[in-house]
Image 1 (cartoon, helix red, strand yellow):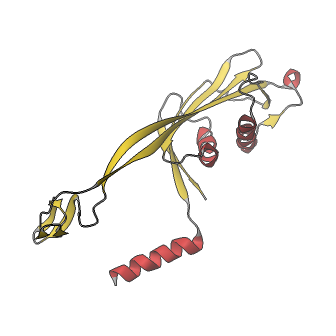
Image 2 (cartoon, rainbow, N blue to C red):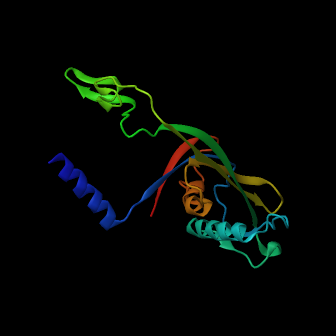
Image 3 (cartoon, rainbow, N blue to C red):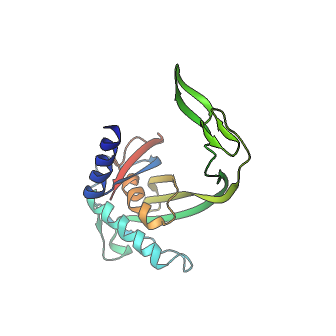
Length: 208
């Protein structure tokens, strides 16, 4: 019955689609005016080396989040009351992973025992016969596991250059493609906007 329940759960996930939860560490510093009426803005022009198609794609995500908060994009910098800038980075941290490749080796771990769970090698048949604590000779496969550290920073200044909102979003995952994660990070940057200044918090956003 237990295996049937697991199988049904797996089928349900396949039929309904998978949602991934992106967890981010968010810290915002702000001096947001309580009665700001004019929320028109213009994007600060990025440097030529940063003005990529990827940057423009994320800028569109930022534009959508600003619209949710009641901001409106001005026709140009001269008619905008606010200036919005954005920066992002992705750093790959590869890890060397060793894993037993011998199909008869069950490796160290926990297994159910008479008096609860015990730690050691999994019981099973090894190269030298059955042993409940088999650690025998084994083949080892080496692989590389990647962990990606991503950071997003968005700032909003007034027309005189005074900083009003400065938020940093950091997220770690094994997902290689930044475009899969950036929508959630951008939403996290404006969760509970403007929020409490200088208070780090964790934000979770589900993406399909």
